[in-house]
Image (cartoon, rainbow, N blue to C red):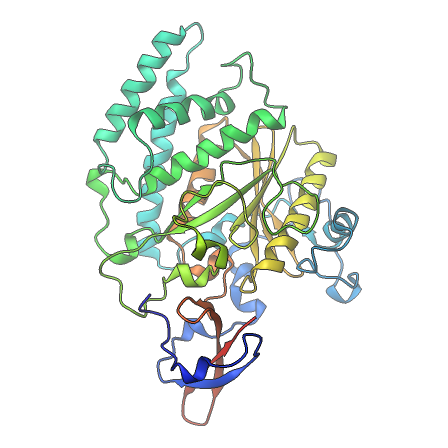
Length: 425
């Protein structure tokens, strides 16, 4: 990739376990590339920390009173017991505005993203309305196919980043409608976790497919209005991820597929393949076809529970913390990790940081309002800046020389400069 810094052959000679190579001064410094303090994530600006509407599972404590461990600690410890303790100390539950952290910071771009989310929610609402009591399977199939065909005609045609045909879209809809329309399928139980897995997977991937197929009258007019990535779910669920050091299976995991455009500059900040560094990904013939979660590439973790009882949701939080340790252990450039907890048909958005755990209020996918909120959140992930996904853009993987680059901010009397360090494992 032409955005990778070109190092001389001499500078990369030597043993592969060398730690530090001479830093290189860079004259080009973007203010957003400096390493922020945790307070600079502007989390407090987007969250209403007033008394939650439902009881919190956590206990208000200062960090100085917190136990001597970190949410991002080693995945090799006795995970679940420790995770439960961490949830008790760090959790802030039912917080308004957690999803807003994923919004694009540019208001004009965000308004465009909102329209995209609303159009996708409208599409799915039309599919939900097709499910009527007493409607036979043949009639329902015809109605769903007609609705999908009509909607797709209003959208951009399938292209480079689309993976589903009209038939694939129909098959996806049939699966997730079982979850969105309770009672529509007598064989489906929303209190059975294994029944929910494929429904949740198909809904997330259905939304991702439509992100790159906007309405014909809502086409992007600038680079900022183009999605930078697609957030998809791995198809394998209830599985032990690759690179895991324990026996814990993960319910679901999400990945980011970076999108590339011809008008991107060589040093564009959206070189996400190098930001989401993964030697496993580099070896894959096609990174978009991998179906099994790998901790070196997982973007967000998902835990599914049969209902919204306090015991089950608290257990879900603890399991998310367990999963997050595997992500932190394998991805050195994560500032925080996104997570989802589903209790039946209700979903919470979560942020798992080194010393904080935030959870939103429930989004009920059986209601139009709840679906719009969840879909808007998923769509925001495709457009927002990388730091809002939890990645640190100052740490990248150099694919040419198979080493990491770390940008460090320096200050002198006249201006802010940047030093880039190169190191190998």
